[in-house]
Length: 445
Ligand code: SAH
Ligand code: SF4
Ligand code: F3S
Image 1 (cartoon, rainbow, N blue to C red):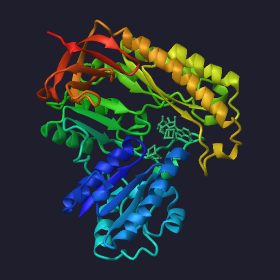
Image 2 (image 1 turned 30 degrees about the vertical axis):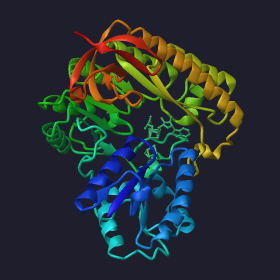
Image 3 (image 1 turned 30 degrees about the horizontal axis):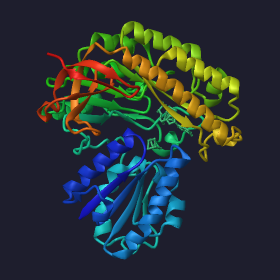
Image 4 (image 1 turned 90 degrees about the vertical axis):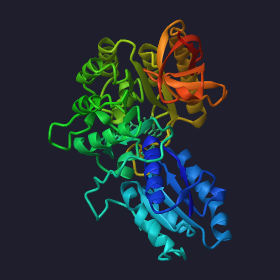
């Protein structure tokens, strides 16, 4: 069987796609990138914004003909949208063989076997596995994906789900309540990965600051970092995503203490600079508290890179609210930001409010914020010219195969000429040029 996994959404979904690939490879499947060359297509879906769902719907429409052309072909829909929209997907796309929600990824191997042995096959109605798994307590994290974007870099999910109730967000309904993975399991996995040659591990969680809270054994992000810090061969540790309401200043002190291996970078989405909008979003902090947290981070870890997310055009967001977001972005001096236009999601609290900022206005605010952030990113990057950055080399550069691309300690993209045998190692690069998106330089002598 040649299997193609098409993934939408965030790193957690990419991580799950990697796990699925591992499970199916263990069953003899060959993983292919091109759906046209596949006998089995698995679509791993995202529900976070309407646009993500629309892309899945149009893909499934196109796969209808593909599935029908050869009766031996199989098609599955998994992930967050599968969880939230299982019934409507089954009704609209009867050519789908099985639907598995984001909480039951571990069951895909079994369903794959059943589907191939003909238990489904006819596809009058897909087999469904959604909601909390009846087979276990849902804490089955499986192994970290065997297929990785780079052999020297790995992700480990340390928690799944989310206990927050941000009023605009589907993640809690798609992935369920937060469950942390035992620290011993994470450590064991990290040791195995390091022994396989992994040099950098990124820990994944929706609100990684609350890691361990549900375990009741004193585990926390800080204690976890201290444990992983000791693993021989691991050069770099990273983690995403922080939540400003949960983030403790103690984390920054720990990062500073372990700074030779824990990289100075946090992704801590602010979402808005207006306290009124933050209240409606139910984020649980004010702009003042957020800015104080950034000060604490910078004081403890000078040079730390800080990235953020913002949503523009949340219900009732006025021009004055938006100006507060612009002002926060100016003050915060983020290294980079992900900027989104508000998209009402059925079933969320915010969707009960009218989506009253016109699309044209959302577009204007999005463009304004994008331009402001590009200016800031470029200014901060240009300030690195002349400095020497320690870079973990990832791959040949996408735009110029004669150059290498890697990441600085603070997660900036660095591009420089060099031989491919440097991939996976640390080099020192003297920066000569900078844009809003990347630094360019030469290996320092
Ligand atoms: N757990 C992370 C975010 C996960 S979703 C956190 O709390 O920060 C990734 C980003 O998508 C969010 O940070 C938010 O900026 C954006 N997002 C989520 N729901 C959205 C919606 N309904 N419309 C527009 N953007 C949204
Ligand atoms: Fe969504 Fe909020 Fe949870 Fe992030 S913290 S996943 S935005 S509910
Ligand atoms: Fe991620 Fe999208 Fe699900 S952002 S958690 S794949 S809804």
